[in-house]
Amino acid sequence: MTTADELVLAGSFPTPTKEDWDKEVLKVMNRKRAPGTELTIEQAIKRLTTVTVDGVSIEPLYTKPENQVVGFPGQVPFARGSELPDPEAPWVVEQLHEDPNAARTNGHVLDDLNRGGTGVWLRVDADAIAAGDVAKALAGVVPGAADISVSSIAQQDEAAAALLAFLDASGKATEATGNLGIDPIGSAAVTGAPADVAKVVEWVKKAQGYGKLRTLVVDVRPYDNAGAGDIQQLAYAIATGIEYVRALTDAGISAEDAFGQITFRVAVSANQFPTIARLRALRVLWNRVGEVLGVPEAARGAIQHTVTSWRILTKTDPWVNLLRETVSTFSAAVGGAEVITVLPHDTAYGLPTSFSRRIARNIQLVSFEEAHLGATKDQAGGAWFVESLTAQLAEKAWAVVQTIEAAGGQSAALAAGLIAEQLAPVNAERNKRIATRQLSITGTSQFPKPDEAIFTDFEPRPAAPAYAGLPAKRDSEVFEGLRQQVRDAKAAGKNPEVLLACLGERRDFGGREGFTSNVLWIAELGVPEIEGGTPEEIVAKAQALGAKVVVLASSAKVYADQAIPAAKALKDAGVAHVWIAGRKTETGAADVDEYIEGEIFDGMNVVDFLATTLKNLEVAK
Image (cartoon, rainbow, N blue to C red; front, side, top):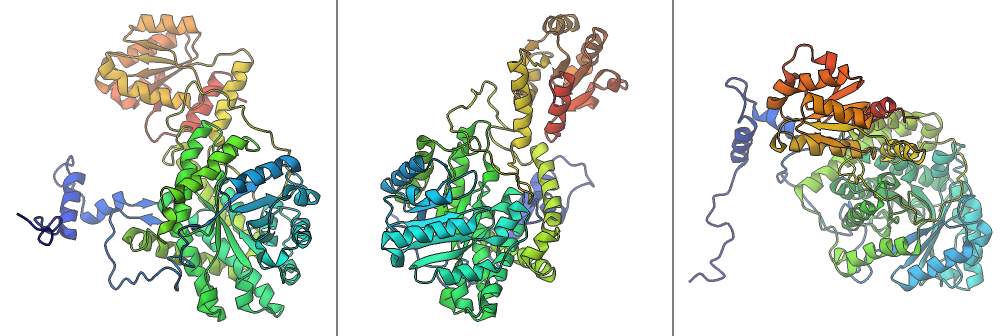
């Protein structure tokens, strides 16, 4: 009988080495390669390494670095968190309110606080809450019992003044926690107007005596909305923070006090590990800034307010946003955020409903009350991949910070167009990957619902002012635009369809039938089919439908015999556009281009294909 002391997990197996792993990798990678063409381990590793849109390398295997020191939560360099967690309240649950109807907003605010929320965040703008309605929207909220924050794109002074007035009237101003939302560089990034950095000094002085209320926000979301990658978001956050601290210290405020006035508001995405590492890296970099400025260790921890990335939300199948929000919340919690906001799943459509607000709030409550995410600080700490990714992001971001400092700081770099210049190649690479589905969007570019009901359960937003700053765009917009063109055509009485001609038996065409249908469903095109038909039967079906575009689907074996006869019959019958699911070379025909216009395959640019198809169907705008 084996006792507990004698039981060793995996004890009967030899400890694998890196050489053992290399051997198995090469066995797989070279399985079908001809003698003399085998890959070396270096070549194999390169093929297995992923590079993100902004140049971060994700390797296939991580091992423990020599002399790695992970450290502890709440201690420098703060990769593992700025402070120790409170298992009962691991972060502030702070939902965003933008509804101009102050009475309705107040109802949502109180509903949040009565059902698990611990913070309130109001946006004051021409298309959101009026500054004069802040007190009405906050009626019944007790300062100190809940964090209270305001923000604005173009009315930051008015928003901050309105919050201070509410706190003064409450009689509990000295107990206040939250943030006044002063962020002139963030405003400039959106509006395109010059950044009035001097106002940070004015507002820090005005806000003295209001408890633990912070004055300044470094909001990185304008850059995320404009397509910034993880490295750029980190760099712009740190560069902006440096500029605010510099302005405060030049005015005689200590660096320690300046650090205590800043909250970083950052976007979190469904890309789990880079998001976790980015939050960790921000604290490491901000600690380094504090170290250089002589800030005491205990005051160097960066406070982070995470918000679901607006860029990852979709209008197509918006229920999938719940999955994205859950993963982003997990990433924020594991990454050590002090404040978390989950944008409701219908945010891309309009103002959230009571139901969508409840679901968004409950994602957080379930995360810490049932999943116990806040019970342990930095659950990812010590994982070799996460530690390596944290270090890589910090190093690359610091190099970008240096370019910004050389340009005169974040506000100067923004005004000179340097930030837009840095964003351009990252956006170009991301757009390419989105179009080819290397970066897939579930429910939109992958696994779309062909019969999706039009989503109507939302309150329309007021028209937003036209701003001249960095352009904002959600990742899914290009696909949503294609789908909207088809919906508009259907509303006008048209029925855009692509005939799928499946050659041979189901075992021949089944896989490519499913693949091609999913590509066409991205734009919500109708996909009538004919299975196993002769060229004459396929032509008859096409003529009955009035088909302008036909796609052939089958295996290479069947294509060799049937593709060209079917395509030739279609062309002779007047069908202008014939495509093939797979590659033209599978037909074995030298004159294939004469009959088959293009190919549908994994890795193709589906945006170009669908745009071309809509043009051919005469529904494109």
